[in-house]
Length: 224
Ligand code: ADP
Ligand code: ADP
Image (cartoon, rainbow, N blue to C red; front, side, top):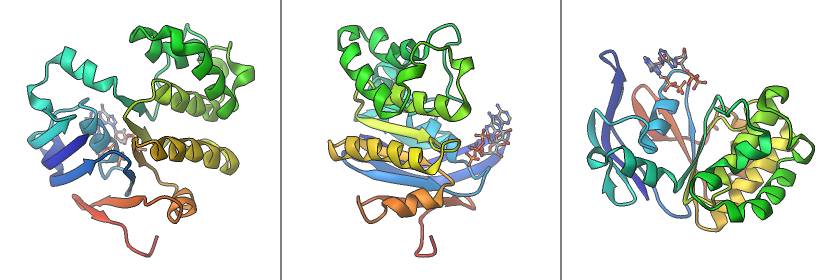
């Protein structure tokens, strides 16, 4: 559904990676690891066309991302649920309204109530539904960001450190939600430093663990 072929990217003339290829197929589950600064966030942003490849090709649902205008990118992105590292909520809307926003903006507001209740309870935020983002803890905001990313039932879910601020039990719960969605055929890509979480899952689903280091994307070894 999303494919990177021989992609290069860097900032200010410093190459982060080149010749990088990755395919997010239906039902695939990928973890992306690697040292801070290796380019994980950059790679995720290329996958949802928030950045454009400097060489090589990114294709979104069969279309070359380089040929898509802003509107076409926006339409393609409706099929991708993104959990940003900094969450990016609208400050003046409640948590429930923020989570429901992707449905509201794609005119699917009528689907909201059922999905919303179920998701709020899954991520343990039933009691925070009417609070403002600023009133929540970092971990609670992360849980809300994941709920918002999946409320439209997108084909692809891309998450940047979705469990960085949550405790072990909750991170397992969030992971379960992603596994459930993956079993329904969604492609999942998670950038994380949390090797403990990766290990907890490896045998359950056929997750591939990729490591971005020294400008290369490689399959992580047994040392994980
Ligand atoms: P990580 O993914 O390693 O947890 P971030 O994605 O937040 O961290 O940022 C990684 C690094 O990129 C940080 O050192 C941050 O300062 C730097 N960075 C992020 N955005 C910019 C920017 N717009 N300009 C310069 N540096 C940036
Ligand atoms: P990671 O997520 O693996 O920590 P990032 O993709 O956030 O890596 O960042 C990779 C490198 O690119 C870092 O050295 C960071 O400082 C730099 N960087 C990230 N975003 C920007 C930006 N917008 N402008 C300049 N440099 C950036």
